[in-house]
Amino acid sequence: MRRFLLNLGLAIVWMGLTGSVSEWNFLAGLVVGALIIGVYSGAAGETSYLGRGWRLLSSFGRFIRMMVQSNLQVAWEVLTPKMHQKPRIIRYSVDGFTDAHRTALASAITLTPGTLVIDVSPDDKWLYIHCMYAENRDDAVRDIDDVARVVEQGLFA
Image 1 (tube, rainbow, N blue to C red):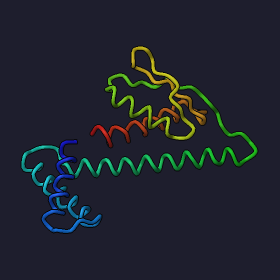
Image 2: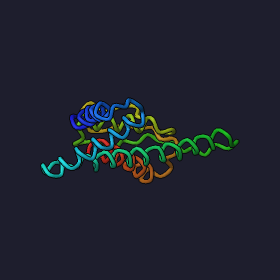
Image 3: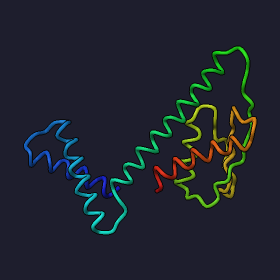
C-alpha cells in the first residue's frame, strides 16, 4: 500500500513537472512512477512492485472469467425448463488462513453465482459453503480451491 501511495504521489509530481493536468498525463505519471519504484525495489532487494501489480491484474482477470462462467451456468438454469442443479453444502478447510484471507475468500465465493458462504465454524477453521452445482464433492472442492488460489495469488502473494 505504501508503494502504491508513493506511485500516486509520483504521478502528481510528474503532472507538476510537465505542466499538464490531464487523465493521460496522470496515467503517464503512474507508468513512470511504477518504473521508478520497480527499479528501486529491485535494487533494494525488495519484492517486485510491478510483479505484484501484474499478479493482482492477472488474478482479477481469472476471477472475472470464473464469474462469467458461473453467470452463464446460472443463466442456463433459469432459461431451460429442466433443473440441472445438484445442491450440496460443503465444509471447506481454511485452517491457517489469516482473518483477511478468510474474509477475502468468503467474499469471492459469495460473489460467484451459484455459491454462497453460509457459515464459519466457531474455531475459524472451516467455511460452510452452499454450492448449486456440486454433484461430485471433489469437483466442487477443486473449484473452490481455484477461487482460493486466485485470491491468494492476487491479494496475498
